[in-house]
Image (cartoon, rainbow, N blue to C red):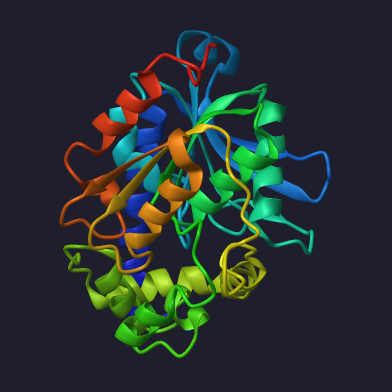
Length: 311
């Protein structure tokens, strides 16, 4: 049963969602529900009202959110990107409003669904940027559909992690499993997760956290399935990860406690000459908050050459 405090928290969250959607609308994006050809999956994506016209003026950029997030979480950042790119911002499956009746749960399946959604919108090629879990999906898109991804940006995403990657974070938070770490069920565990995600921990009242948990936990079983189905990080050694062929920009926080910055250097070494790395001093798992972050993104995507969108 919902308490008065939780009800108030839901009102606050609802107001926040209204603001996020208003920002997306202000920047010319409209919410689309895309029914995929498999008839099982439905992707909700914020996209330009007139896709063909928008993409003829500015190259498309696909933004993929992290775990327990949604497309709307990109709202504070679209003002930095929309003058330069036609933005496509989907909810990944079981986050926001995207869903499927398929039993598949891997990041590879997520990538296939996002690719199908873009094709349904008429977007055959785009830049792609993914944060954290969204980086897993972005990387899979890049290697599964190299002709569809012009350049790739990986933000704080442990592409080269092994099955022990989360041990340190679990120890710091006291979580007994990766499920408890990434899909918390109590205010205390949610605060512990925030402590290792953010460099400066936001002061969120308990009643708002309780409301957020009550909403997120309606899909917690699906989130647990997504964690268990990850191919990335499944083994002792990440030998099964293919190399992405695209020019890649790796952006990371120096003090990331979810994916240690060593994984950023490892990914750059693995990709070789196609990869650039920028580490933001003092930043945690959300380097998008750092000054100069989007200047790096815009500069990388704007440089002409073999990876230029129009080449």
